[in-house]
Image: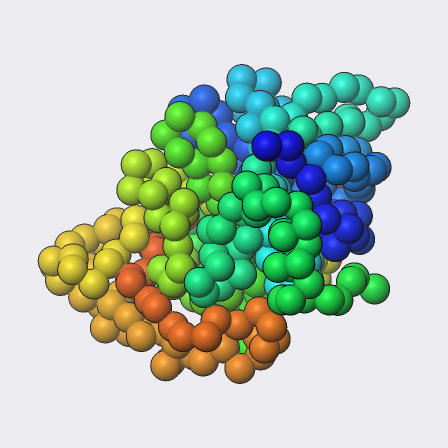
Length: 139
Length: 161
């Protein structure tokens, strides 16, 4: 089933930036902060990383494309989502563009919904479920 | 050997006591990463970070097969708490032998103090549309920190300790 991010998800990603967790092939995690989001589409998130932001994930990402993504700042409280996908990088000027094709979407709200796969729901059903829980958008 | 600063000890408390929301980052043994925000956080001794095992799923499975973990400040950002802590974690569940030792701390001392975290530090500051309906703690994750690096803008990845 194709992944589709909701408008609320896109808004929180773009407003807050994200924490990215990547891992070496043998499972050593490395986290960086991606403060600049170039764009979001239905199934892709594009980050523009500074050299220092990229330095932490450069080696593990070269051997393992998986990226786990959580919204930064107050998004960590308000936007209870985790996105997982595979990333590829390209150099753009003095920055590094990281394009993540999103393959999985999870709810991280504490309680009975924690860990629920959202991308396996019908998209209309997912939006309805989300709207029942939250209507706020980031300021 | 890592030793937390006073600022770190203050920052690694529940948000309602002036602390921080943190991300707990784990990975399966074959490299599939996971990242989840955690409200219940505290320090123990000078090099351990504690997280409540409440509603942990992938995180719990990952820790059981691979102890390599990170805890990173999520909120507030840019407040001087620009830290990422890396080390090895275990989930000390209620059934553990009280004498079980994890890098110098026992299951008994952790569970006696932090085994009913909801009661000890209730989530009063958590918005009603985010907070859980009922607590369901099953243990305490203990991260033995081995290195600390910065996530400060312009200095990400610089070693702090």
